[in-house]
Image 1 (cartoon, helix red, strand yellow):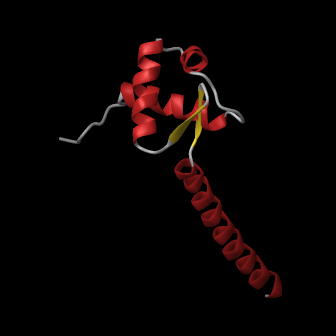
Image 2 (image 1 turned 90 degrees about the vertical axis):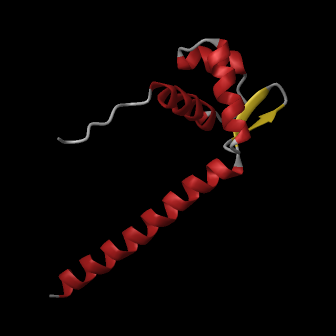
Length: 98
């Protein structure tokens, strides 16, 4: 029998909140996060505290912003894509010479 997997709704909410915070160019307040995520303030705060404890976000003033840990994930992804771009460029160059 094949194994089936299901989406974890709590994780989906947390990732939506992380996306809202990570996409904001300025610290964003918890009430605004809750509103944008379509969750209660309590749910937003539980996720915020968890994300902060895990080091993905930081409190700045009365709001929250993505941390250096979150930025490092993006940086690693960009490095990967740049390496892939170089490999593809090299392959195209070889093909054009043939």
